[in-house]
Image 1: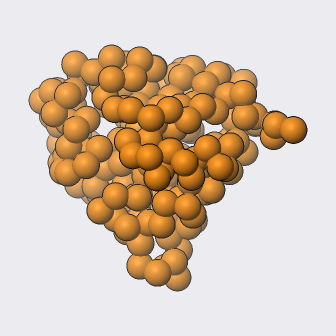
Image 2: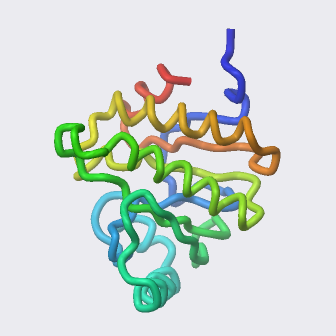
Length: 175
């Protein structure tokens, strides 16, 4: 039996920069400068316009705290917007990392909803260089997204875009 809200969540394997949605989420660093992994890929594919908006946000508000989210243009991407959220760096799980990761997903969805986004694509936040265990991250992502979209009707579809097989398998197991 399928869990409520599952028809609105889909796991796909691929490159998030190629997804056509209203918004894609960037697993950003708190300085919003672009970096490695998905963050660097989004900035490269989206072009300099995204970085310029990020610089303006940081100049005005300072660095973005872990778990918070902001929105910029999608630049040259197929997505209209990029929602940037710094995920937590894994430190053994005793420094609030699971709550911070859930906040990254929750606050990104909130920003998407505030900007009338009907479709949103997420990468696997914090599972790369930040070292969050992929199995735990997948469970938190699916649970947080499911709980959020059960309370809203404006977000119609959420894609969990997995770059590698391991993340994809863990997300599938949690759907």
